[in-house]
Length: 144
Image (cartoon, rainbow, N blue to C red; front, top):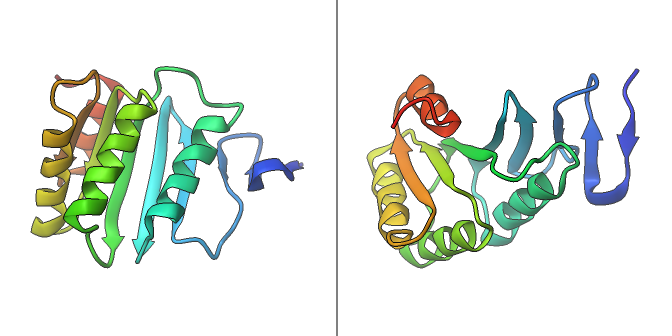
């Protein structure tokens, strides 16, 4: 049946995918279908967001080169400009090639576009999307 690993607060659900075990955190992640999927809801601190990214990238299911789809549609507030810049810098520092941001508001869209600007000139691309299918296709590398 289900097996759970205590280290890192990561649980294996139904054999795959991996997901963050804590239900109280406003950021969850899972690796499925060749993409790291991160979902933020309510208000999320930089530390909570970073912990989720770190946990996903430390998962035994993570493979170098997997891209990320970050669903922020349930996020109550977009991060500040300073935090957005810090997040973009962290994504670049972690060597993630493509980070798709699925947004639910114009403010979130604008912040994701700022992330793209902050990653300019690096090997990381950050792109905002309103359509889930487009975001997933881009994160997979199916769309250019």
